Image 1 (spheres, rainbow, N blue to C red):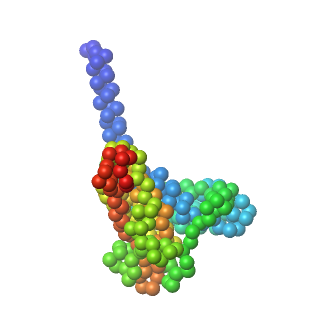
Image 2: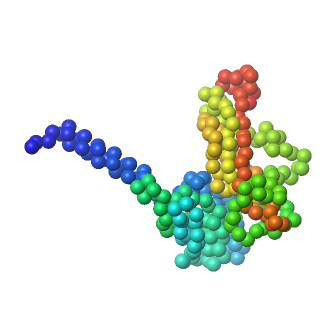
Image 3: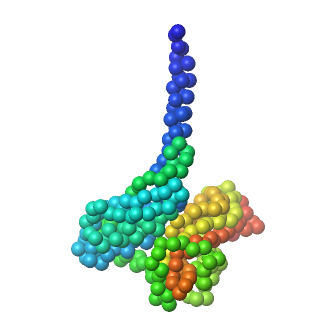
Length: 264
């Protein structure tokens, strides 16, 4: 039986569709924040070991771990590295990441995985000289050693933004620093972006997830505003702990709207 070119094309398209569908249902673990944002967060949290920095030690460290079907990672390890202190820092950083589990034909499965952490002494020194990293003042409590994440309802003290000037409020910070995205201006997009994130014991945030999206560049701007803040960590049992919290950031066009004919 002779098969027409049209029939062959249809068959090929069907197999391509099946292949794409299988690829969509079979994937490795992914950070809940997505890879690009997670890479940026890891960079923001990295504290270069001083001895490695002085000796200009640089390179890539691969951290291996196991991820179960619920997305929980365990058994962190480094098999080879150019510096033991950098290896310990790489493990500390990767332990912050929350994961979506691997998928096999659409079903969550356990697997082994890895994440690469880049160390560049030259870039780190240059960045610190240009814009020294802001640090929290010394806190009353020590940091809890476990990697557990607590909900704010279970804390003695919930996380709150840290400002050098104690008279500054979160609302004032947002009013002063929010940059209304050009795309949102052009299409008159407005609304409230809701972010979920973890405040780490060093006062920086990780694992940012957009719970309510507005679009038009507003989501990315909300993420920037939260990333740029230092936070006073949550407290439980007289220890600083990792805490999951949320923040609403509202993008609102003034009454004179339409493109740049208004105030934002």
